[in-house]
Image (cartoon, rainbow, N blue to C red; front, side):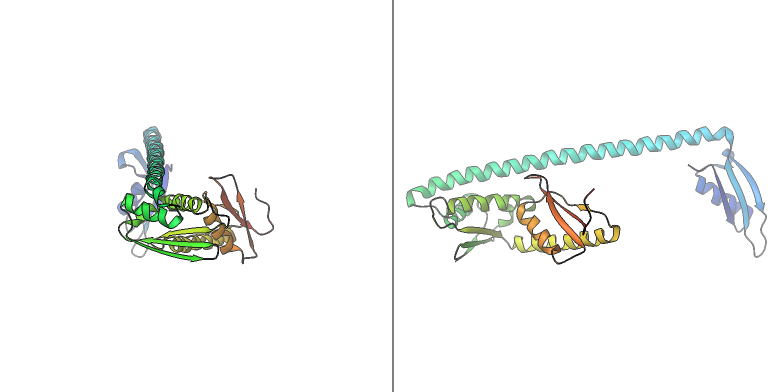
Amino acid sequence: MIFEFEATGKNIEKAIENALFELKAIRDDVDIKILDQGGLFKKARVLVSISEDAKEKYIKKEQAKTVDVEDDFKNAIEEIKEIEKETESVFEEVANEVEETTKEIEKQLAPKGKIDAESFIRGLMEVSGFGSELVVLKEDGLTKIELSGNNATNLIGFRGECLNAIQNIASAIENENSENKQRVILDIENYRSRREESLKALANRMYNKVKKTNKAVKLEPMNASDRRIIHTALSDFEDVDTISKGTEPNRYIVILPAGNSEN
């Protein structure tokens, strides 16, 4: 907090007003020293100071502001914690719904013979009501399934977590009784390509940050697929290194200047 301020103005009164504004003080609480009366082509100059007997009042006022800021910060932290709890609850509900839906689909399709990834996804569409179009492309060792239409994006989840869970289930079903393992990739409304572009843009921004500050940058936890995109996006830059740290599901990437050990 400042207790004095030197100000200028077109006249003495204006200079005093400017100083009071900067000090956030009233005239009765200050001492005024005129440094220059000013003139036709010269501004007036004054030194305005909080009086000794008024300083305690302004100190208490400043302390009260600090307490208010701390309270606002604490309240914000509590709100964030509540949002995190609600988000975790939503994820749990989605996971439970996916599990229940899987069981229901298995019951419906069991009498018809072997269940594969495609029939699982079609059953999921029927039971959940999400998705109206399905495109399946099969190659050697790869099955690509693209789902769209009728609010299909509701099956993506936060940062693709629900989408990845469904893909894992579909892959397990596809390979349950198969000797030749088939990789299954599920996409919904072109989410994966949009996510890839977003991660590449993030990698580029973090690269520039590391170059500018010459300090390592830690990214938020990501799944293996997203981490692979970051590693690949920065693999051609010789002046930075990328490493994965931590354990699943909280494994994350650190981007750091090439040749430097992470502190």
